[in-house]
Image (cartoon, rainbow, N blue to C red; front, side, top):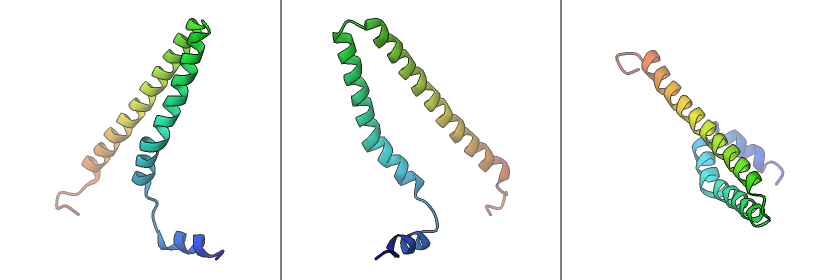
Amino acid sequence: MRDIPYLLAVQANELNTEGILSFFLSRIAPILLAILGVIFIARANKGEVSRVLTSSTIAIVGIAFIAGATTLVLFGGGLVDLLFTSEDGE
């Protein structure tokens, strides 16, 4: 019974990063955004509008950084594929 995780790790030679990313984007991110929204609404109801605006701006800038990093990774991957693939398709 103790060897099952080891055997599964040995059988899987590579990590399914696309599956992990899709799980995070479909399950975890909406929950985190909902929690953030509840916090913003609670602060706005207390009259802390300036803090809500500051937090919202920080969240939007963070999302922009994540989107920019994703774009750079995709662009870099395409550039590497373009530069380091041979012409005969190997």
